Every structure is written in structure tokens, then in C-alpha cells.
Length: 458
Image (cartoon, rainbow, N blue to C red; front, side, top):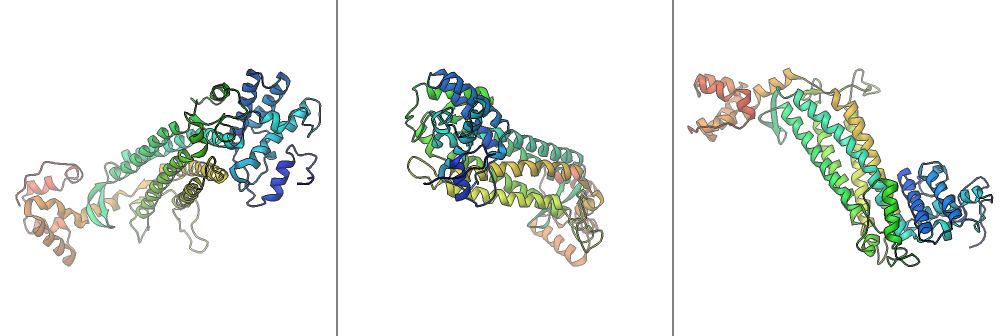
């Protein structure tokens, strides 16, 4: 392929230099957790090969030392391959191998590129292939990113639950089809949001079990060629110790290297989370609409001016931000799904885009949820007077008349209310449709928003 010049101060080598020239696509580089995961595999591989007698102690120790530094982020600026790159991630993988090898050569008294001392292929990559390293590192990276997302979801769930408790006494009108419905307590509405977030948090915790089965040791196609018979078990043990995760060798290395199903399942859960968050954010925007020409049932905290031309205007910017992030995550999931089905035979060559989109979704969702909880949910205030007014005037109040006067008669009350502008309660009193005792019991807020035994007179 000819010669290539590599900058003198670079720790990457010629394969990385070729990738830089071949893929000047997006300017985006590997996620830090992806770099860390690959570097930890290099640490574990060196320990395994030393233990099994395949790598001498001097080379193993220096590889472990440098790979540990890479895992700590000390050489992230040297990981320069674009996320849109050679299929399967070979370019990024070799970027890591070359950085470790070149720095190891320096520590042994040699120069960068003196691969007789430490080779990126023969020593750093001993017993490995891009084809088992990349899917394994993807699993490790997602496992590392999961706790941050779970913590952000706990924060959001807690903030919504606190508002549910705070707003529990406030009666308002429910709305179905964006039309008047029976009353509901504002706290009940918020409790629904909190429970939706809780269920998805639990679902994510369950998803970690999809990722602790590793195909590392499968080598090029899953057969384990060029590895010791004990290599798989030993390297997974070392990775468990390095990461703190309860990892195990895959029951079938061929499946673990071919199938991207664990990543599509995790991505689909991210998508489902995004869908729920969009719904909640949109509800909050509706409830806070106005203040003079909308629902105005709640006030979102003002975090910045909303208009460059309209003085005093404040927009629901945190909810809008969350929507944009969620739309992006849904798009990422579609790409991941397409890439996952594009694998052929022993390998999925689309792993780089699956990894990039998945890690990006975790990152932006975690950050967005954290800031949404902090800068929006915790500062929401209820406009109780507005809520109570809607509760008193909703046409849905007629629903509680059904057991007493029947559906059709109650519908006539609704029509009269619409025709005259009188409230349901006013018409009931004027027409003496209920006794005072039944009226007070029927329109009591607790009766309106909780199950009650009703004896039908209709």
C-alpha cells in the first residue's frame, strides 16, 4: 500500500494514519467509555497471555502499564479515528493497539515504531481479533454507562413523586381527547408520570443481564483460533476483576460475535424511554401553556428569556430540550436496528455505528434527564386556583350523575350547560336533580377522584 508519514509526536501508527486519510467524515471520535473498554481488554489479554505462558513478563508488564493508562483516559487525544470508519471497527481497534505498542516501546528504551520490542499486532493484540474485541468492548461500555442513566432516572422519578405528593390535594379537570373529562387531582396526574419513569428504570436494570455474556476468545470467527484452550475463561475472569461486573464467557461464541440483538434490545428500551419522556414533556408544556391564553395549571421555572422580540415571554425550554434529545435517540435507534440486521455470516461489519449511536444515546439521555429533573421538575409550581376553577366548570362532572339520573338525562344537563353557560353544579341545584345529601357526597373531591360504592337510581 506504499509508505505513510506519521507525525513525530503521535503515538498512533501507520494503520491509524491510513484511517485518518480514508475517513475524514464527521470529526467525531470514539466515546471515552469505548476507549476504556478496549484498553481494559488489552490489560486482561496481557495478563491472560502471561499467565498461560504465551507472552514474556517484560512485554506483558509494559502492555498492562500502558493499557491501564489508556483506560484512565491519558491517551484519549491519540484516539483519532472517525466514528464512521472501516467495517467492524478495525481502524479504531488498531488505533488503540498502536498507541499502546508505541508508548510501550518508549518505556522499554526504544522508539515509537520499534515493534520488535512490542508489536501492536503480535503482542498487544495477541489472542484477539477486532471481531471479538469490538462486540465485547461494546458490552463493557454499555454496562459502564448504565449506572449513570439509572441514577438520572432515579432523580427524575424522585422529583416527580415529590410533586405528586405536593400536588395531591389540588383538584382539577381531567382531559381526554383534549376535551373536558371527569376531575382528577394534579398529584394523581404526576404520580402517573413518576410510575412510568420507575417502570422504565426497572426495565433498564433488567437489561444488564443481556450484556454480561462475552464472546471474547472467539478470535476471528468464533472458533478461538490462535488462542490457548483456557484463554476464554481466564480473560473473562480478569475482565470481571478489572471492571467489577459479573461477567461470563458466552455459551456460544459464534452467536455472541454475529448477533447484535443485545444492543438492539437495549436501544429499543432507550427508544421506549424517549417516547415516554416526550409524552411527559409535552403534557407539562400543555399544562403550563399561557399564562393568559392557555391552561396555566402549572408554572414551569423560568430559566431564561423566551423571545428576542416579545418582552417578558418565558418558554418551556427544558421540556423543549428534552424533546429534541428524545427525537435524536429515536433516530439513533432506527439506525441501530438497520445496522444490526445488516450483519452477514460470521460478522456484523456495522458495529462502529451501532456503538457510536448507542453510546451517544446513553450520554445525551443521561445528561438531559439530569438537567430536566434539576432545572424543571423540582421547580414546578401548581396554580391551584386555576385548577380548582377547571374542576368546578368541567362538563365531565355530569358523569357522576349517571348512576342517579341515567346517561341520557345527564347528557341533557351537559347540553344545557353548554347552551346557558351555567355550571353542571348550578343546573343540578336549580333542577333539584339530587338531594342536598347526595349532592354534597357526589361532588366531594374524594368521591370525584377515588373509587366509591354507588347505588344506582337510574
